[in-house]
Each structure stands twice: as structure tokens, then as C-alpha cells.
Image (cartoon, rainbow, N blue to C red):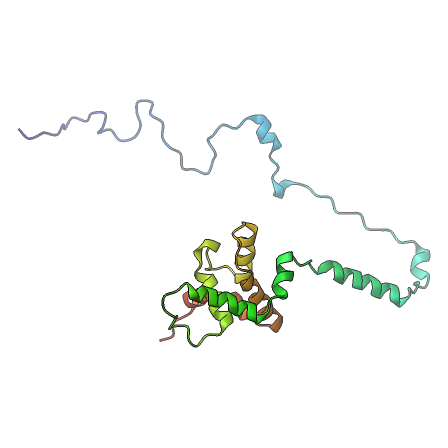
Length: 198
């Protein structure tokens, strides 16, 4: 026998809450109870009043008096100290990478190529530096290469203790000294960000 529908409105047929059932409020008001001590400790930055520092008052004698002239060498010494303080110190890895020669980088690449059964045909027109950097890009154990400059990716891997190849850092530092900023972007990232012109 087929089931029949009940036409006399039961509990399911009634629209809206009628028997004490609460409804969900979608207004912007927070309905969650918050203790008063927590409410009082919350500081809203836009409502916080900040007093401006009082301007220094100048004496009339200071304005009319001639300004004192300091010796030039002291000002230059101050400037040199500021410049020296602004330059970050190099890490041990950067110092080691700067001392690395092209022959050591070539030896590293030959050791990678020795692990393969066949030579890389698709990389015949690339320089040794670009080959090493592209190999670093596709090495997933150092994290994602999309959207991250190669130097930052290498430094992140070093901080995490993943021991990325020092040869990659050496290549990046040499190219940076030459002024080649294009080397920081991975080839895969360039391909994905390229615009197709039809």
C-alpha cells in the first residue's frame, strides 16, 4: 500500500518556530556570552587616546644667537657608523658560499648527473648555473618554489634544518653581485605567471 501524506498540518508542516525552538540569528551582534572581566580588558585601537608629545619650547636667546658650527669629520664619522650598522652581518653559509668556485659547482652538478641513467636532453641550451637552480626548484624536499624567491626558499630550508645545497646559495650570491635580479624567480613560477598573447 502506498504511503499517504498527512494533510492536516502536524509539527513538521508549521512554518517557523512555535514550541520554544530557538532560531539562529544572522545579525552582526555577538550572541556568545563574554565575562565582564574579559570585556573590560579588551582594548580597541581606534578608541584608544594617544597624547602627542609636547613641542620643545625655544628660548628667545637661542633663536637670535648664531648657530654653532661643528667640525665636518665628526659628522662624517657618524654617517659611517650609521651605514655600518645598517649592513646586515653575513652568515657562515653565505661566507662559505662566496668562497665557492665554479669548479666546485661543476663537480656538484656532475655528481647529480651521475645518478641519472640518461643525460638531460631538454637542458642542452642552459648554463650550468641555470641547470643547478632548476634542479633546486623541482626538489620538493625544500618546500614550494611557486611564489617564493629562490634565496628566501634556500634560507627557509636552512632554518628548518633541511640542509639545502650550498652550491645553490653560491650561484644566487654570484648572480646577485652581477646585478641579475631575474635569477630569483623560479622558471616554473615564470611560466605560471606568463600572459598568453594571441
